[in-house]
Image (cartoon, rainbow, N blue to C red; front, top):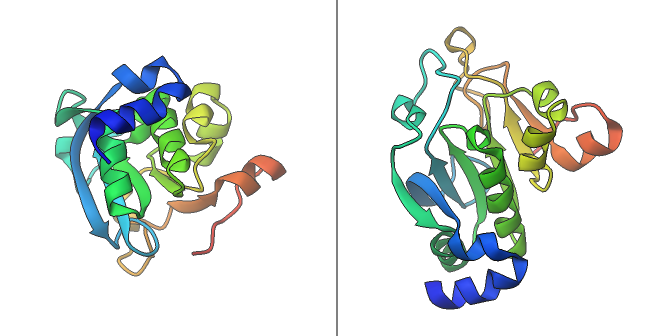
Amino acid sequence: MTVSSMSDRFSALGEEWGRGSVKVLDIYRGTTVDGPGFRTSIYLAGCSHHCEGCHNPSSWDSAGGRSMSLAEIAAIIEEEDFDVTLTGGDPLYNPETCAHLVSLVKALGHEAWVYTGYTWEQISSDPALLAGVREAQVVVDGPYIASLRDPDLHFRGSSNQRLIDVATSLATGRPQPHHP
């Protein structure tokens, strides 16, 4: 599907789909490290956590990367036909953009995982952050802590980070683990 036909397809979702843009550092197609199975991982610019030992400190700069329209991102997601991981940087650095991307992923029939340095407790107590992940399947929460690094963990860098099942956590009012 072309970018222009993708824009037409999503114009019914609202004006922001036609003109919105996102600062993207990179898009990895067919990766298996940011969630189960083959995925499309979208690395977004901007992070204020500045974790010591971060594997991607160049992602901290919100002006980094290149601007991509939501239609361009949608075309890549549709072409690859994999579930999607939003990472970076921290996708919740701009929660409104994160919410639009997660909605886009769902509209294309895929699941979304969101990696963030915020904890679930911080997210669930902040309406803007919560809106950013409400439609995601999983949030990988918490800052990377170098002293808690554990290379044997699936889809996490340090043992304080959790795989949070968003729907179950919202239903119960408490963070609930996701088991891949």
